[in-house]
Length: 235
Image: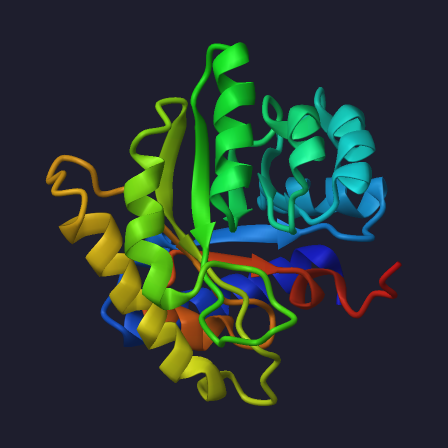
């Protein structure tokens, strides 16, 4: 199928999953993951109505950012991958949301760079919800204290939580982990911050193999690559 057809198919699944859970499908943000995807395909995705794009590597993101900064519709960029502190300066003024803040030292570096640019940067705290040693993220037991420390960094806007769940043959295999993430999200975004006027926090979870389960568990941002572009060879 074409990218446009793939987008339509994914949106149908989003709508079905949201309605089964009693949710409004418009609450779910579809982020197209453009890792290893060439510019012509990304333009197809943008023209098909997916304008939120996610990249994992700074060195791959930067040329794409330059190539598409004047394209219409203009993309909104999300940084999804593990971010090294020495790379923060290259992206902090170019992305709308950094999903993968997994240490206070990284948060401090983002805050410092944002202060130099006189701007606020939206970030998500990445949680290692599965406890896998090969995954980045704050442990679930440390999330509360981590978020509390972010409150002292005035050029950061804490915007929610993110996780990368294990690969699953069936979407429902990750429901338990997604439910744990939802509980952490509620505790740390709504109860801890006590801000009744702010409701636009992000719970970023769910990818091509399990996004329907993530939506049923409360995700409002799904990161989709394969279901939009097909299988890719990763560099």
